[in-house]
Image (cartoon, rainbow, N blue to C red; front, side, top):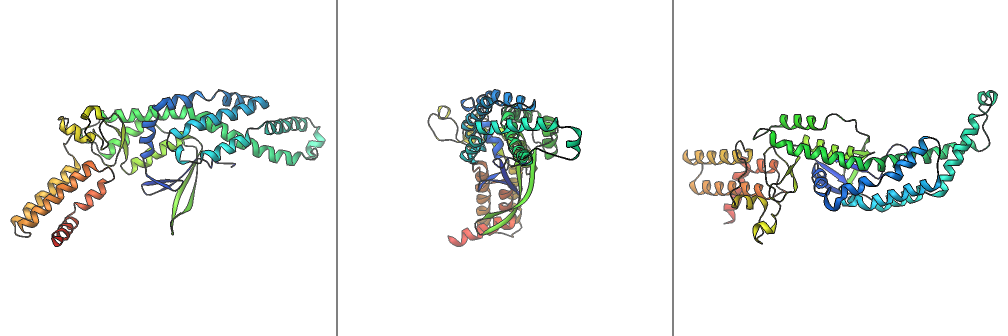
Length: 377
């Protein structure tokens, strides 16, 4: 563990991220984090647990260590680990293994071991010039120095990670919500350039603290190469999820009905999610937020809607082909019905992506499915 926090590792391939054999669309952790941050004051609770950590870091920077403060800092980290599973992606990480590592690291024995090293190092530094030039060291000092520095590296990495996590969650939440609310100031149908410009204006440029490697991940009998990232802080992870997602057209939005955040996978300026609307609004009826908005007349901004454009153009092509005798009226009606069905599916099925919709609405795929259905009749 000299150069990375193995506890906080994720694999990236295409538009998905894999954590502990769980597969997620890139960008979904941003949405989960935004929705979970304020639940039970999770963000504030984590941010408040850093005093003992900071105290230990300060004394160690001055070359001194107190076994009581050392053990107390470990207990504070264990308290943080009790809260972290409430925020993505920590519920998917091995919290128990991390707790074991913390408990085994922040002990009175390790504190005294480090203190012994500090004392021996001070004595070595006071040796005369002759001993220094001949590199004469006290018996056992070389091994003590090697092992103590391994322990110190681990302790400092852990202290840095957990000391920063409070600031990280606050900073991430503030910047991500700034991005989401800033979307309202963009044009009614923003393009990729506008999204990218808005993202960089919001977040600026940060140097991420990440150790990267290419690795082989087994998926059943199949193996694939993934980009494996080891994050030294939470902010690096959440911004990686955000920008990796943005590169695939994934970004967070805020639903005006249920007041939760959801993941967009296209450039539509969608105002409502496909989750269920609060029952107090729907009088006990199970309606999605989009269905509820349509029912009360709160329509989406439809101008330049790529989903609607694809549907309109496909229906126009169908009408043109039937008028030229290339397809029958019966086939045309079935094709228009299927096109409408696909558009409705995209509107309400969160798992049905824009690329899948685009592909299914292609002439060859649409007509092939119509032929399949007609044959089954």
